[in-house]
Image (cartoon, rainbow, N blue to C red; front, side, top):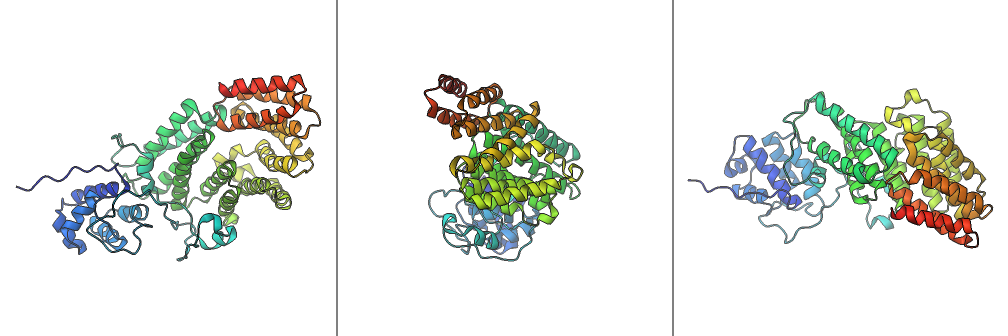
Length: 467
């Protein structure tokens, strides 16, 4: 009587997850015994068993052979890059795994859009690599969708379909639409954050599900857009690590689907996040990646990405390049034709463009002693143009306009009026970014302690942020 197989724990580590996938496919294709499968891929049965248990390393060649024999559609090869790719590269199959569980490495992965030949990754840490050289030599710093499933799905079983149908794709699209609306109106915190978290878990769980080839591109595109809106919501709620995973999932799905427009949108958000957290150089790199083959993008998308470049240069206090990038963004936006844009780009209208470019000019006016007039005018256009559906964008532009006037000190009492107007909008939001901008306004208001109205504004800001 054969001994029972060991119960696997796929959520214990990436190795255990890989082993569980291997066992699942082995049983599905036969079932085959360890020895039978080993004979088909030219290794011992005991090695197959140990890989399943997470105690042995699998080489890329073996993963390729396993995919071929088990007819997985490339599941194990894609997973190999995430689990073993960097720490085990070049090592043969071995009967013993290194002690301990390493953190999951991010594998540089070539996507189908760029279709580049083999490249040599730059040496040294990202901080020491010249940004433009990195752009010229590196692949996309993203990982395959299948590799991200275990990062965003819980250990508990969830209900997933046995095959992808148009209904599941419609549900993913509907979820993305709902989260996009709720996030823009209320911010990414509270109930919106919980909705987004559940949505991306469910969306990622669909990726390994069998899908007809005719539906695969549409499934990938819909999950890419879901990753974008969920990542944006998580970014707004300061769940930055979660946002990075969602954006990477979106980038890889867009890449595999051949969706240049979704890819551009993803890199725009990745740029904005890194700029926000204080790494404008990485943000600039993401923006310029998004502009790869800009001839395939609409004029509005090019404007969006040039604006991200401008915001990065503004944070660097690089006056000449900021002004040049704002000019490039303006020139692209003048050519915008909404009829040519994908539906999700409808948000990037006249108000959004002026608000985004104003952020770049704000940094020059406050930190590089440049004329604040142009930034102020653009913020005013944004405030007037944003309807209630984009209450967060309006509130952030109102707050930044108040900070600009307060920081320059020309008319602090007018800045107080603007600040209270912003607070009327911000008080309805659950946005960490909006709250951080309010704190910045309070710091500038602190320069005018001799003005009672400024002190009152600071007190109201403190109460609002606490709430």
